[in-house]
Length: 472
Ligand SMILES: Cc1cc2nc3c(=O)[nH]c(=O)nc-3n(C[C@H](O)[C@H](O)[C@H](O)COP(=O)(O)O)c2cc1C
Image 1 (cartoon, rainbow, N blue to C red):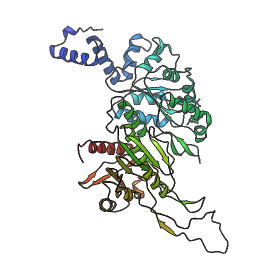
Image 2 (tube, protein in one colour; image 1 turned 45 degrees about the horizontal axis):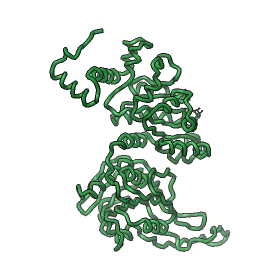
Image 3 (tube, helix red, strand yellow; image 1 turned 90 degrees about the vertical axis):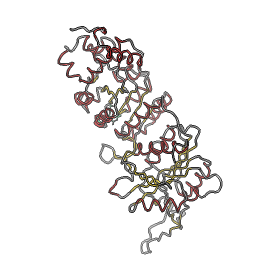
Image 4 (spheres, protein in one colour; image 1 turned 180 degrees about the vertical axis):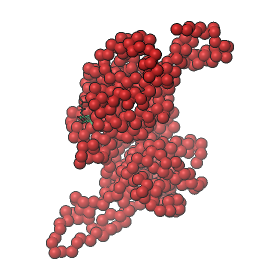
């Protein structure tokens, strides 16, 4: 093999190399090694397969990446949702992450190492007792040479093993050996998720500092099953990865600010067992509360009935009706910012039954008389004392979105309106994405279609800029 000494390089290259090595705190020789490894990784494992015999030390040494890109180790567990993790690899790579993949033995029943390898562009690891990889304790290298470990899907079994500190296969050995932050995306049948053992393990893992995304509520792969247990969507997991990677260095522009957020629908009782509701999922409000907490704010989330996990690090108050929500909001004041993302029912049933209304054969159908609910946004925006300096409302419209939002801004006395078209064809109500128009006294900003997490991040950075006086 040809040898190259630094002296043979031209002066410009030497200077560049010296600067790069100094910036990364490495010797020039180590920096060259790291550049070659990056190039080998980028070229893909197939090149190594072609030019390096499988079990030689040279090939093994070429495997680790020591790149400037954020490094994610993705552990795929043995659940139906494993197929979504293939898309997650793509999403992480789109965000500039270098992705390595470990598949549990059970995961190989759901997706092939070949598919994961084609998507990561590198070798996929499946076994702990593999002489080719373990001649230099490869599982410890996998554990160390990463900035974040993502487990998706995190099976009930993996969660149990992690909570107990097992290390009897490659995935659990890596999880036990890593010093990097761990993010779990649990996925399992709702009964498995609700099981006391899983909930015990979850509590332990949270106490151990493990981060979570999902699980979400919805249809399960098993026919006719619904409930909490669906793995978070790849875009949601990628968003959580982005946020975690930035957490250490991220400034907290909302530190010391108190932010109140309402979310979800309200339920207006007809009688003790029936109610009037709407299709709000609460996803946008929950994403805003999570983004505000990540920006360092002291967040109070007042939520109507939804099927979503509570965001971390927020004070959570659950309510049912519009009147309960208004009372909780007034109690939570003062705040620096109030964001009213809840879809509050405009009317309640004036003559709600104290007892379950019975069908009475031969008698007329009961008539529901409606009474107007308090307007929470307008009530808070018009308060004389304790009005939050920035009051933000949502306008969910099905026609004339901007014109209606402008009229609402004036009528309600709030500072900003986030207008969105919730016609059924948009899929926004209950869906994962949103297209928002920010209406303020200064004009209208059209935001691009994006995930509700991205829209939340955009809103929070706009609020931070406004509170710190960068713009209005
Ligand atoms: C068809 C099928 C689907 C499964 N889906 C899940 C699942 O979504 N979540 C889960 O926790 N376990 C699921 N299991 C059970 C796991 O595959 C099993 O507990 C396995 O031991 C997990 O191994 P691992 O945690 O090492 O990946 C499923 C099993 C089968 C046969």
